[in-house]
Amino acid sequence: MSNIFDLSLRHRQSLACLLFESAIERDCLGHAYLLTGSASEDKWLLAKQLALFLNCTTANKLTLGVCHTQHKHNDACQNCQWIVANQHPAAWMSLTGDDSKTGKIGVAASRLLREELSKTSPFTRVVVIPHSGEDSFHRPAAAALLKTLEEPGPRCLFLLFARYPQEVCPTIVSRCHA
Image (cartoon, rainbow, N blue to C red; front, side, top):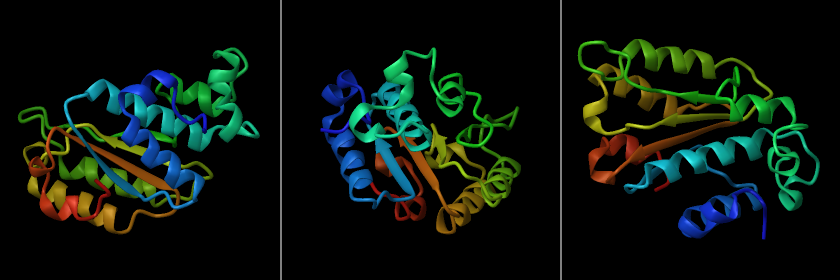
């Protein structure tokens, strides 16, 4: 058994944890996943633990766990410290509504994300889209996101959250593992 996810999350979300662990161990992690259901907190925890694992600099992390869990914050690598604090400059991103009137994700935010992901980076960039339903995007923003999902660049992992897959634009769902 690997140490990518903590035991409590593994217990609550066994299928999702097994899916990601298997993909990582076989070196065939996809670039986009749609996480559905009502357990929003678990989705965020899964995303954070994936980001920690994918960017931790500790040797033998698959068997020992990421340095954040081994050292309990004190001696964690810089990547783990930044991700835990939600302050990593390149490996931890979230795309949320920026339109002050509607709360929807605007085209500028989607294009800015695409621009950021086009830059070369030594990190695995984990991008969380916590509200990926059709009603969360202005239409041009959804088109820009679709373009980014079609050509994600190296070492990018998109995690889209929705309560039901039917809430998400079908063309976006078709680019994701569900």
